[in-house]
Length: 117
Image (cartoon, rainbow, N blue to C red; front, side, top):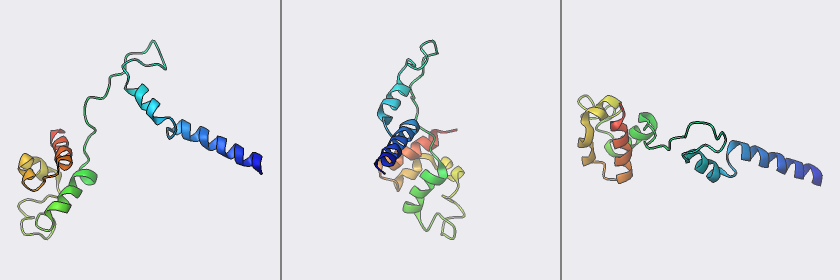
């Protein structure tokens, strides 16, 4: 029984190391370095310099649902003029949207979304 438990522990440890749960910090550091240690003859790896793409459905729309309900969503008073459940409306409004969005983290996500093409 004890041997089975040890084998199970070792199998889980190897699996977690392989998928990145264990030692994730060193894997991240090696990915962002400018020289690849896995293949010394390979081209240098560029560090990420831009933010990840902001997703409208999971990141942007929930901000506006929390701040602009019920007026700018289906059935609201100004939904016909400014439907905030559509990405094109958010892009056309731009920085004007910040009159209601005061949280700097939310503003940053919205700026990232607006900067996308």
